[in-house]
Image 1 (cartoon, rainbow, N blue to C red):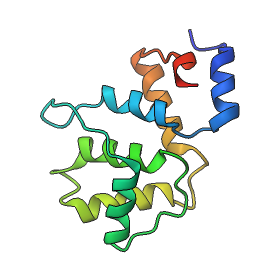
Image 2 (cartoon, helix red, strand yellow; image 1 turned 90 degrees about the vertical axis):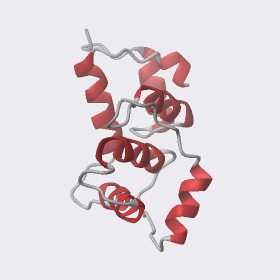
Image 3 (cartoon, rainbow, N blue to C red; image 1 turned 30 degrees about the vertical axis):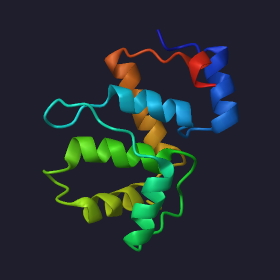
Length: 128
């Protein structure tokens, strides 16, 4: 089913690499549910940048909307469990994106693998 890369996916990757565009980020967040099954609100890029700055945290390897996606995903999956507060959530975003052992686009690759494994199609035309 996913053996052949659609031309639109190839176009997405040539434009954005293995990173979240604003449209892909919005698509991903719409599918997220928090630990109680509630909808997750997308964080605005400017708001997240302010939160990070106010916390004295600098993410060196944030590309486009990767930090926004990571923030929302981590908040929905881990807040109130292994992540106890906003400061630790922001530190997790930094740790994940700035991991020196990680390959470029690791967060996007994980998201895409989850979509494939769940059978969730991506309309690549809509993401361009």
